[in-house]
Length: 155
Image (cartoon, rainbow, N blue to C red; front, side):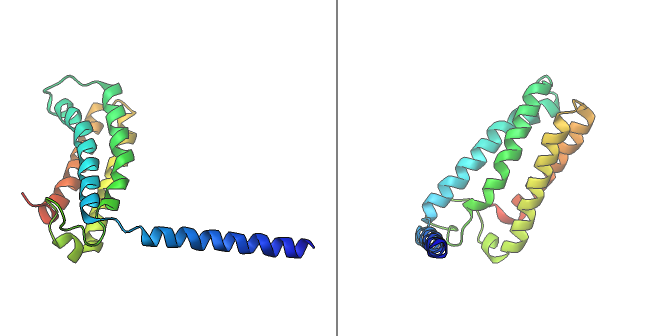
């Protein structure tokens, strides 16, 4: 009897996994949804980045707690960016994403991974309160952004 029960459990698990896969595969994201998603993620990044830039440039006073909080938020949201670039989302709504993204997707992914890595490093260094180290890492994140914008973003 236990082997029949185990077989039934295994069959139910397989059916559940297949059902999940089929639901995910059939739930194609519309290009306009992907574009809206990535714009929203970028908006959150910029919202958190702007005060950091002000602190690094000296136009607003350095606030360790705020810098740390915003750097952490950026590091948490950056990995979600790549999801906003599925195939076919180069059109369907107004976008600054260039077709080169999908023509060179491996390079684009690599640049996004660098952005992710450098953002995580900024969140980590921001905890130290060493403002000189923070400024250096901030510049690395900025360079990662710029490398992607130069190749893959319309001005």
